[in-house]
Length: 309
Ligand code: NAD
Ligand code: MLT
Image (tube, rainbow, N blue to C red; front, side, top):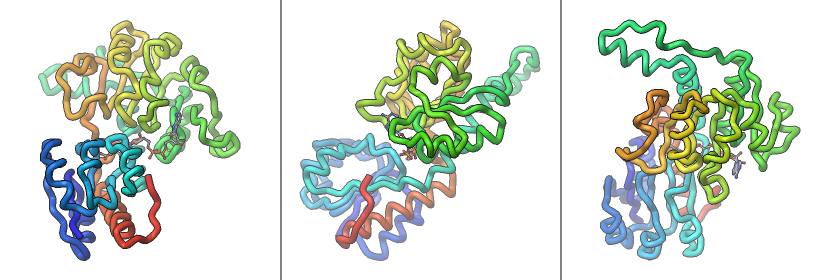
């Protein structure tokens, strides 16, 4: 059987697959080229760059499994794959710590203006007065999406003596309370939180969850962190809220259009800390997700039970 790997995936995972199958690594394939070659393959392994559209799935006549080396499957038409009997599996745990720690790094960088101050020093300036920050201790952190990463962020925030409130309709209130977190509706979080961090998947329900109407409700001076998915926040509305001073600053790792879109209004904001989708970019996480997805693909191709995404 043949496997196509179309995004950069750690060698640790590729080596596991190569022990049993022929593996072709073809990166940055134009969509029409992917559609042309996909009929040759029994399985496809991607990260977030490859868009596994309905057209790709329709052309994939031998495909039995699509493995996502990471969490989000919003780049895969899961419905079309399922209808065609193709298993979609992900690696939900391998990058949890990486994304959790990146969120904490972004929150602290945002609170203390670290990237902006660093840039001025590189320019030979010493501007102590310009970069007054805020403390985390005693502040309220609103977490939207209390899954693996949201919970990891909550635990670390509590260690920094923050109050944590969260919105997640699929989490039991007792479970949250045992963690020391109070569950609330989104609107209540918007009015109470000093920092808001997003850890939800991008779905039709979560798309544009934070938009103009939401920004009208937030506490003035709130700081917002998004290391989940672009599209959960409306970027144009967010940029406007920052420009108007309603939102004091943002830290964003994920964007509506990736890779870089020069027209993205967030790029122009001085009060924005931005990283190019680095949440899962640690050596440990990349090995973790690659190994997990390789085992998932092997199980799927052998017809053994697999946990679908
Ligand atoms: P998870 O599945 O463990 O948690 C997601 C949580 O969102 C779940 O608790 C679920 O109940 C909740 N949820 C789902 N739909 C919801 C809705 N409509 N409203 C409110 N809550 C809802 O996933 P995770 O591993 O914690 O990942 C969270 C997000 O972070 C995902 O979007 C994932 O793709 C993204 N992620 C990004 C990076 C990065 O590189 N920046 C790395 C890893 C994960
Ligand atoms: C994920 O959903 O796992 C992240 O987007 C990480 C990634 O694959 O880069």
